[in-house]
Image (cartoon, rainbow, N blue to C red):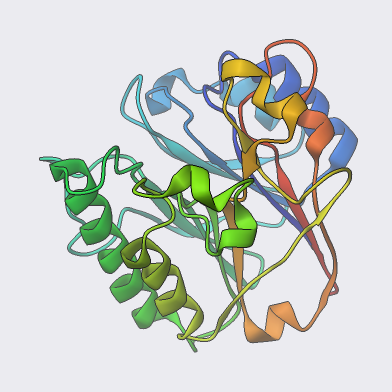
Length: 256
């Protein structure tokens, strides 16, 4: 099974690139974040024409997640029990069973500034995700992937000193990712096709070409799946060209 995750930063703006990428890479399951459309505006016809079933959770021009699957799509669940809001719950997570694997696509809140209400919301949301995962951990094969807006270690940012006092690298945020791995999930370490294994580069100041990136798009696998990983890589080429997303896809191949 080939599972991938990609923050496309607007599925409409990125549709030609997304279709081309799907035709080339052929993932069995793709988790998408930041669709930025309501479900009825999602380009379903174009995606279904490629052989994918769709699970969608989008409410408008912000946030939005989706799961595309060629191996079945059952028991779709939007959000999770007790999901906090800002002030209302947002379209940030979606779970479905694809084949025999439970897959969750997540778009964790950014947090904006340490100490802000947005940061408190982020921590509460991550705490809720950990609680929701507790209920599913140990029940079968599980994948949680997407844009976590957390760099798990200092090795996952281009310069740790540049992030002192910033979100994405605080002890509190990293502890939430650690709490997920302590439930038995494995943070897959993808290889980079070039440079360091980052998944996000800000559009500003030529950060991509300067290598000033972060690894914040994660694929967490239950231990049984992690033991069967044959390859994992960051498709840096998808970050190049005309009108790219500021994120690159992460692709993981798992032996059947």
